[in-house]
Amino acid sequence: MKWSHKQPKFDVSRLAEERDRGGEHVIYNSKEGAERVFKVTHPGQSGLIVITHATSHGEFNSAIGSATPLEYLERMIIINEVFQDSISFEGIIEGDQSSLVISQPKVEGDLPEQPEITEYLRHVLQFERVDTLIWYRPADGLVIGDTKRSNFIKTPDGDLLAIDITARFASATMAASWGYSAPCISRLQQELLNNRN
Image 1 (cartoon, rainbow, N blue to C red):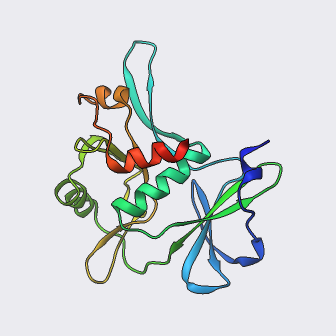
Image 2 (cartoon, rainbow, N blue to C red):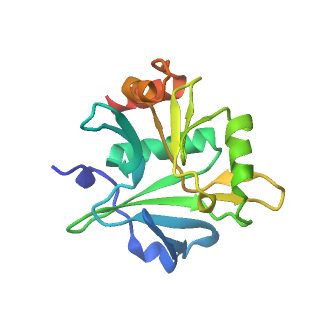
């Protein structure tokens, strides 16, 4: 049985007009109110995540690659905890190629400048840059990616909010490729591992 058959089905009549379209999602307003938006993954895809792969020369490269449905849903749990978001998994739109649907609070604000994002990630959240848009936090092994300006909002109060970054816990190989020892398993990572069983 396909994984999607076990998931709640999403009622597409809840979608209002299309709001935006990006590399991962089509974003819709909600007919249920202006407080949240729906994000629908492109058919047959489960969003993006940071990956590390070996080259033919035995070196490792990091990049943004395709996520599995489980990685995508775990990413949302991580974002909710680390970045204080309020993402909800809404269900599956089934078809020849299924889509995952999440909802997220609609946030008003402006695009922050890249130095503000760097300051926030480095000094507030204690991440270290390991690639252009990829950051790693040695304390708990968390890696985030796609940290471009358009994936953050600066609220009128001056707070920075991540609205569409990737997140996962690094493997020992991934950490080593950036020159770090194997990360400890954090409480959140252990909870995610427990939930897989």
